[in-house]
Image (cartoon, rainbow over all chains, first blue to last red):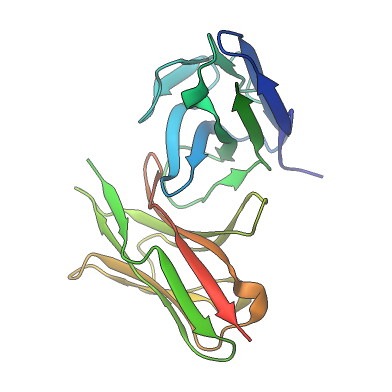
Length: 114
Length: 109
């Protein structure tokens, strides 16, 4: 089925460890983005990309890196995990960064940093 | 900078009664606006969107929203709540998409 696929669904990390959250879409969408969801905070934008080779920071980029080498994939890297990064992470895509299309979300990755 | 304010963190209704979830936005240009729904432990699903066409927008599952530029509002309504409507609802302004903090809709039998 077409959509946004996130892996893994659950992950537990120790403080200081690094890892990559994977996001892939098969809809040929140009725009992809990463959010974190914390209780009472809604979703906050971490990084986004308007096309292969182009990325930019969102509202809460510190501690995270991204790259976009292909249209399909947009991995999110945690460089040195901290307990404050315990959250649910969502990847989303859209046909373009322009308004009006809405966004397709993945099912999320629940990350716990101990 | 743009922002979204969802005026109620929780809304409680009885099944069969109307639903009103309030959203105000701030944007320096004519925005696109969305409502998303998130059921427990699920991803987000698009309910409806406003993109400068008709100001009254109809979405899925009987929801609709009205864009009022003079009031900078985009409130979500439904004439009759169903138990399955219990979920978290997010108002979003683009671009890049900025989310409100969410409104939890509780539906009592």
